[in-house]
View 1 (cartoon, helix red, strand yellow):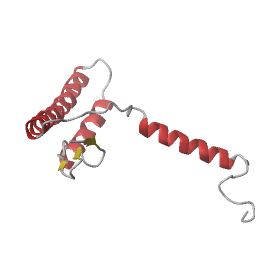
View 2 (cartoon, rainbow, N blue to C red; view 1 turned 30 degrees about the horizontal axis):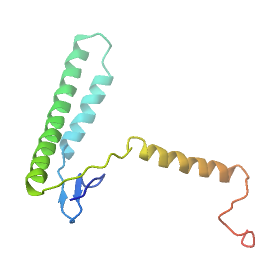
View 3 (cartoon, rainbow, N blue to C red; view 1 turned 180 degrees about the vertical axis):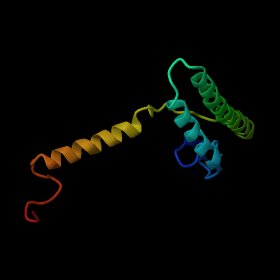
Length: 124
């Protein structure tokens, strides 16, 4: 059984089934933005800042608990449903950054006056 961790769906199996859950609901995401703004407006070292930080931490802890619960339940379902589950160690930490970086390099090269090699010279 192959498993793909994705961006849109959390887990996609090779047989086409999805395991997906929304961890932070829309209202919670909005509330988190409000709590972050409140925290940013406090003065460093104040008691009010400590309370604001605690409120942000509580919300983050709740969302992290949902993620951990989902991961444990999904792992249990996959481990009990299939005889063999293989994981591939992919270097995904900088994958999106690298893609954006190469795109910006290509744009910089094109805007620098260098000739474009992807367009035939007869069309330029």
